[in-house]
Image (cartoon, rainbow, N blue to C red; front, side):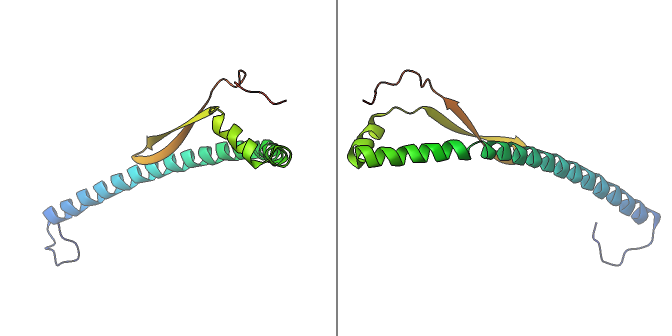
Length: 122
């Protein structure tokens, strides 16, 4: 079907245009539903990220202060050697989640047992 050209005003052409219009409205409804689902997921992700971000600043400030104090009291060489010999305490995996044919990267953080550290400070 070609739009914008001279078309004979027949009942067959009218039925073709009517059917084309129905298909276009169904496609528009499907796309609108997909848009709503995506927006809802984005809003949920933003809310979750804001909660996570809100609770992270104070512990991060404490960690940075402790690292700075360690550098000042122990020296950079000692702190660097301890950092190299310390095992990782968390593991981050990235996965791709598909929501309505849109790929969304997700992070999965797993913490390891931190109670039995193989070192100590005097």
